[in-house]
Amino acid sequence: MRRFLSTLNKNAERWALLVFYVLLVSTMAVEVIRREVFSYSSIWGEEIVRYSFIYLAWIGAASAVRERAHIRIDVIMHYVPPTVKTLIYILGDLVMFAVAAVALYWSFETVKVSWEFGSVSHGLRVSMVWFLAAVPIGFALMIFRLSQSLLRDVQDLLAGRPVYEGDKLFD
Image (cartoon, rainbow, N blue to C red; front, top):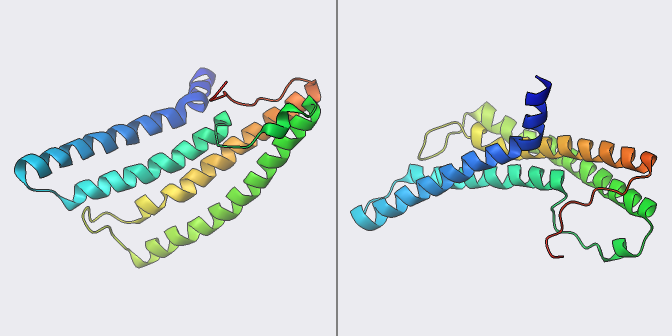
């Protein structure tokens, strides 16, 4: 069980991203063929692509938090000692945690209103709650990953290890 949870912790976002990406690409390919070959398109295809992209973006944002892959300006990080660097990362994660917590709260309001009024999508005729839930799910995942990051950074600080900076894109 522990190995399963470890694998899930390491790859959950990747698997979800793969599912939504395959759904997006395959639906888009089918819709392009239908439009160009048969001169016919459907509204449900556009909705599936749109909502898959939304889930892809929010789950991808949570995955980027885990890997410290968000765009950042880190010029100053090359000139400060390791302890200060760790403290800067902790401060950044705390600020991002606060913003994500507020955004999570307010994103639930939208889902709640959609639930109360029973709004449905135009093409799929599915409750909009499933699509609007992408935002709170994304922020909840971000909060979870930020908590893990903060714990890791504090442990690194106390142990005197260098802070995890994520993979470099251009080195």
